[in-house]
Length: 316
Ligand code: PMV
Image (cartoon, rainbow, N blue to C red; front, top):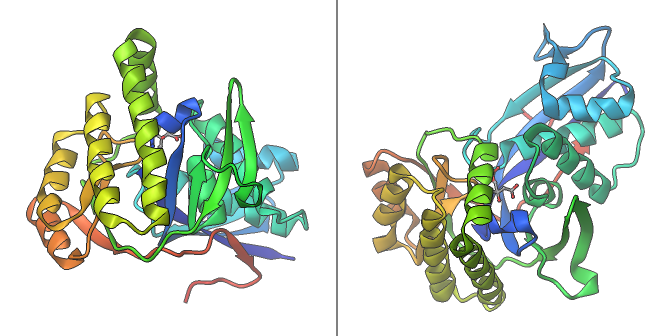
């Protein structure tokens, strides 16, 4: 193959972010916003047709290390807002892992892609969980550290003292609206902030336990399509994340604006800025409320396929 094409979706976290870093449960859902990538062999490293020190990009750098730093020309185009808690760097890692495999006739096993992409994220951030990369690789909906059903388990990943099992979940048709604050916030420092709080204060560990309990309850609600209680759990999760110090005035504003028209709402991803998500059956009203508070809303389509490769560009 001369050129390989791959794409991978972004995601939002419905319940359990931050707690998942400590091996607690979490649930993430893929969204219909994708990262598109093409890779071909080249005499020098190139990004979007310009000579580049690709090794300066730690996600690409890590994966290229598995190919003896073979020079490649990479073209990328993302429809996922960056630094917004929607998993754009995870989707980049997943798509690049898949494209490099396709180009080099290596296995396209999705579990291998998810693991390689997680290592690339970890290499880049120095911390984190395999939630984003697993959600992007598998698509649809995934739960971490939840399933006891063997047939639902997709893969197991461990790093240092933490281990995660990743399982598929069926997500019934529900409507979500994502609202972006437009403020970019890097994941690493927010994860570090929670870790410091947790290490120095027993209260923070209790909050993380509480988030863990909410996430387990939330999965029951998803399985029984109980949007009313799922929404309540999302809002509760937001309050607990605020106590952990990862919300912001802008996020709170968008969450509060959406609540009169939603079953529940919360920040999604690392927080600090980025985006929130609302579960609703009045998506237009929620979009209006978010816009009126200065946020950028979009309605999310779920049931989205994970990573895929092709010999031709998917984009028109
Ligand atoms: O903001 P994002 O999309 O990178 O999500 C981060 C989710 C955390 O739980 C805060 C960190 C992690 O790696 O799981």
